[in-house]
Image (tube, rainbow, N blue to C red):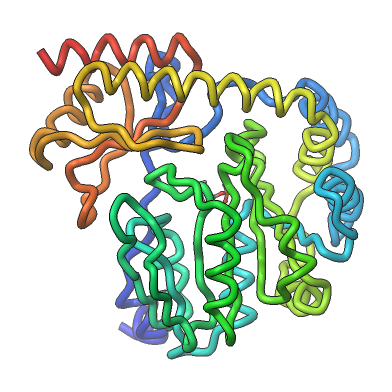
Length: 351
Ligand SMILES: *Cc1c(COP(=O)(O)O)cnc(C)c1O
């Protein structure tokens, strides 16, 4: 059994990350992976089509024009931006670059579970600290030993939005490591830590084109940090990590902020209407700044039953067999039509 035995013990011992079910069937109302159910900017689609002519040639290694567009949109210098093959690539680069085996990474429970997978891969000790009350950061933060601290804002899968003062408090509580604010869903509400880049050299912000920009299939993410840190991250980046089509599509999508605002605004309005409608059904629904809502049922058995019932009626949502949220379902916000189908099928199941 040489083949398997040469693999590092931390890899053999870890569980692979399990994404939500992919579903290509058009009959399925797909509300399980927080994708955007509206199309991307038509300019992005055109740019991808035009880029096809160049695929015989390697892409520009540093995604320069994409990063320049990001610098313009987010009002930061271009040397504060790194591009990745999805934001998951940026997260992997951070572990690769910063963590020795045995180092400590911290996140708050419940949260995006890929951080745990990445920690396991890099033989990093992963500490999950429970949120307090309804998903607030703990009053007392002891994070002196942390190399990397992760906080999605808004958080996944709860939708909780942390105000800037809380991000600032977290940055001040991590004297020897980086705070990674994962802004995968920030376009669906008004918060961003971007202005704090001027003040804190231990801040990294991660963004993705997979949610608000409707480009999950293209695989593009961005990281923002001080240039001294980014120069180090650049060393471990795969040098052609963002392909030609992806660079072109993401750049055009960024430069079409009118489309982004139009789509993100629509999704946010549908989200708020969905929260109201679900509360009127007597369900517990948490406030959300993201493109999904977390709905709590009276028991784990009931949540699983509703999940299965919806699935048999061609509506896919997400169930997590995870401590503290095993009685919840996470429902992505689709189009108004998607949400009408979801509500109709849910009501039938609740009767
Ligand atoms: C969806 C999601 C990501 C992954 O984004 P990709 O750019 O598609 O890799 C990262 N972080 C959080 C919190 C997410 O929900």
